[in-house]
Length: 203
Image 1 (tube, one colour):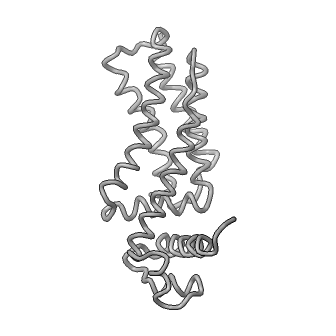
Image 2: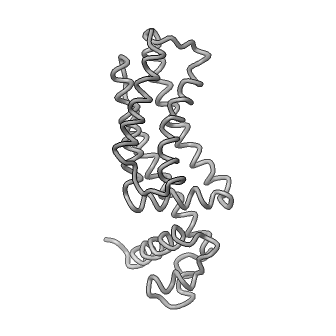
Image 3: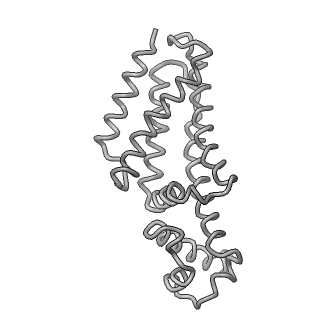
């Protein structure tokens, strides 16, 4: 059974997430969060003794766990270049799916915009997701290395390039163009880039 206090915590987190995404962490006051939830001034500290910073920590952590779960699902065994291409695009689609969800999008934007005030631990969460992606891709590259023109020394560079292709389209749409989802045109362009890259490394 869900506790009443847990339900209230979730309401506070959701209200704070909306305000942080709209106004920014520093510009949002605890009073505004209280009003958005409909609780009295000061009540927020009953649920979050460390105030806004504790709330920010929880929002960022939940977002990173959610994104990492999507990445974990992309860890599959590949035997040929066709399966490798499919793995890359499945990974890309899962990431896009996370950001197409309103909560996932807000969590991502807060994490990026407030990165200057994130703790070392939170920064590690962000890098861990990228590390997990690269580990998955590295394992796949090594399993089909006899089919591509890539030496052991170049495997890390290859995975960096693949991640950069995916990152560019996501960051460009969400951060630069301020869109809330990755459209089909952008996905098709990313597919073309991935296919071209794979053709270039094929023996």
